[in-house]
Length: 263
Length: 263
Image 1 (cartoon, helix red, strand yellow):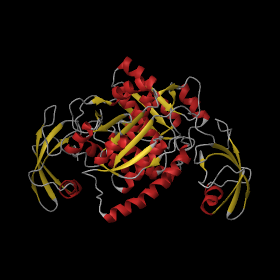
Image 2 (tube, rainbow over the protein chains, first blue to last red; image 1 turned 135 degrees about the vertical axis):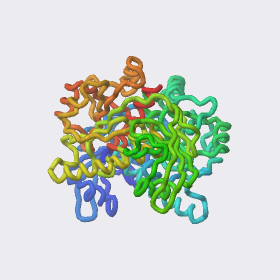
Image 3 (cartoon, rainbow over the protein chains, first blue to last red; image 1 turned 60 degrees about the vertical axis):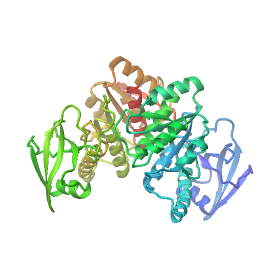
Image 4 (cartoon, rainbow over the protein chains, first blue to last red; image 1 turned 180 degrees about the vertical axis):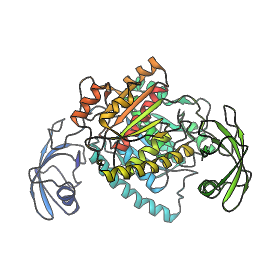
């Protein structure tokens, strides 16, 4: 664990008592002992220095001291990089369960701010009533994965999985908030390279300017969807690589954007 | 399937008879019919236009015509990008089975030329006699995954998984063949950013100059290993991101290098 996410109930008390799942995670899964010190963050984003002061079979107590800008030396160090992160929104067309989970976990590790599942024409998952219910459940599972990935990677970005959108809602959701990109495997007119597009944007707007990336489903985007996105101001990007599976394409695009934005 | 890898026995005959696994793959897994046309590559790298002319329960026949530089329009198109690929060697410290498989599959999709498993101080897998045997088996499994990933992604790079090395053999294996990079989560002296290092190298040597990337195991590299790599001419790279899991770090680094080399 690189950064412990304090429970939502925490409101700044100097001694926090935990029981049930939360206590189990710290004392059993992570094997924290009385005296173990570690860094935490509350739901407002404030950093805390934490220390286990007591534990028994089902509960534990933690002394909480508000940390400065930098969390003090903890038993498990925070990452070396504390600089700015690009403000990334990932519009991810639905793909099969395990792939979606892998994308959410890895995108969270990389510090993506928002992940928005998108229902597109060629998505494997269809929007019947039963499937909407399944997706709601899945979203809870995805949120749990996000929490774990934030803790493991020490990410300073509080990644959020948002409610699923239909493709026709993407433009309205983004509202031209910043650079919007999508990837298509067939060559289109006016397609630019990822490096050129992102590096001119970073030069103009700085490393933290918002970027939206839309990644198509397994079956690719339909012609109508491509037209819709272009009309809505999203730029088609030609990737100089092989045809990638959806889960590889997402991480490829996010990694490349992060490296170019922070170059 | 984007590109069918012809069996090693194929030596340019105009009609190829397949049986067993190979016939099963084409007629059952891919459901090819008599008349289906697709692109293939033989083990020398030559491209072929292929067409199923006959099939029965356990065998099939394929008409083979050598393709020009460009494979002709096939029923399942080749990727739009046919340009140069950076010549990448991935020295991947061993990690747990599924993670290693995911890295090999995704690195192959991205067109990495060589994948070399490396035994390092903090690798989970140790080199007992039994484990060496397991690793040999695993290598066969990895080679099968590579073949599938090449076919699915239409990669023009014939990715090879090489024999496992100890960390102490890495420098000798690479022989200063080109830029060597490794990633470390603690800050080191003279650490450069990925974008700067790779883009100056590409400007000087061109987009196809060889690059080696060493990715540490789950537990990170030991201090001795870091010193050894630096002494051997590998450059330590500081990633401006969170602490990444090994499988995310590999794809992050490969994607970023590919985008910057081809910018």
